[in-house]
Length: 281
Image (spheres, rainbow, N blue to C red):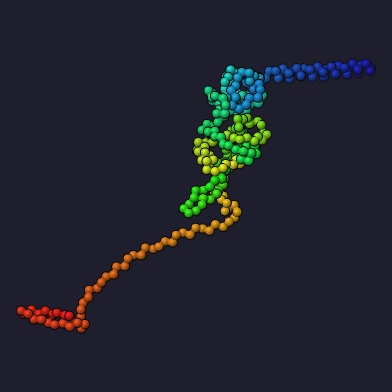
């Protein structure tokens, strides 16, 4: 009787094991049957502004239903293209990460359309202690002397002249992966042509300061700047407006004809040749 029970347990265990094996084999076969496409990925880290060659790339199988838009299937399609953002190893190369075909490598490849790159001299203070790194945004402030008025000395003023300016490079480095602060002597900014003119004038009339701002804060604030008198709370007397003198209309004096009255003078009536003449004196 005991042997029958043992045999029954062995048969049951065998059946369960066989069923599990069949299920596993079916699952593996289904996974192997998932449709996939070849997608080009980076075989190593690629810095922005770099020109791509075939040694930097490889292809992997990518599920057909999740291929990212703008992906490439052939490595040859990416020969000599330039990346305008940094690409990490294993990351798919997408068309949106590339500069237009025919672009030369270097910093000029990462400048946005319609923008310009301009470099300003900085130090450890002006450059926000080295925290103004590529990819960060800054405001530009100028401290200068205002134009002099007649008989008055020009007032010193500090004013923000540019806001939300992208830092393209510090010194000769444009990589955006490093977050360690670097004290450099020059910072390259991305500007519109009009802002480039403002910056050029600002650095010629005064001293510049970079103000680091939050990367996601795009709000702009218009200020009138601050003078030394305002900074120290000194009261500035308003200039008295020149008094207006009303034009006086000239008064015309009209003379009345003088008529001699008979009571105020002596008159003599002269009769000559039948005519009468009155002479008064």
